[in-house]
Image 1 (tube, rainbow over the protein chains, first blue to last red):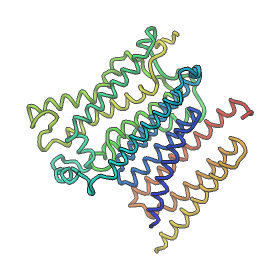
Image 2 (image 1 turned 120 degrees about the vertical axis):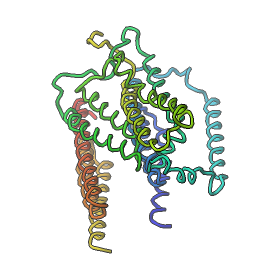
Image 3 (image 1 turned 45 degrees about the vertical axis):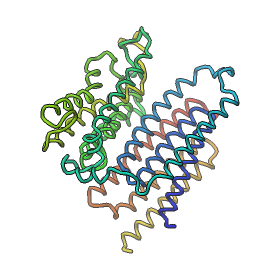
Image 4 (image 1 turned 90 degrees about the vertical axis):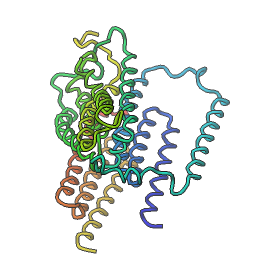
Length: 317
Length: 96
């Protein structure tokens, strides 16, 4: 056994241990912290599997944004009443749930263990046709050309999630503001950090989107980074979120999928069909769509984290 | 093994030692503020030594600059997080 193999086995064991600890944790906040650590370890696993694109997404979305989302949820649930005993599942229910989980886990394990070696793969086909897209990163090529429909629908799902969150708003607060209230003359280390970091973060985010065409990176990772910058500014209470009835906010929200759809429909007339790109200009078109998708992702994720609007923009309760 | 490789092994090894010391402090120190102290001080030095050790292995000037940027950004965020946690502890009072 080489050193790297030993490290891999240690990493896998650590992931399992943290996963079990997260499930077993009694306190909600501890479970969330365990989940964030689990996400970071998983992104290391993806790096070891040479899937750097997935590792970046896992670190940014699976661990970062979801972590903030869950911590916020845990803080909101802290002041609610504990679950009444009558609603807690009895032993029979728990046993049934455990059996169901074991059966599903066993089926998944059997599926993985009986998989043909080498497994069925479209990777050689993707690599062979990579040059036609003009892109250097096969992951971006798969996401934006051969699986463009899935990628577009993913962004639509994100918008549906925002609508779902907004639908929880109180009628009186509709059209209002969500998230922490900004304070004047905000000082201290967090405010300093929130003023210092965004310029760096924005440059890194644009870099990640741009190199995504040829190297690991892309719209989702870059968009998540931009979203993180917006969240830091809001959490340090330097600036508040815009009211949800602002037109520019709504336009930014739908810009990515809308542009995807417009260029996709154009494919009927100038290329082979829906979501097909004309020969030769595939790469510029993909980068053009990605620019709008970054905008949508950067707006969507903070809106999901800060939740439904809970006060009117003028400061009235 | 060249001189650069030996330098890398020594510096990264020293960095790992500081991470180990920081982790021991995190587990053994009596209260939150001292644990925070162990974590931030040892981690800053540990990461600094690891980055220093990896510099000779970086591919070109850009790779080396990226490593340094990682170090600076982690320093900045870890110092900020330490201050924020310490503030929260102080607000909550000395009881815990």
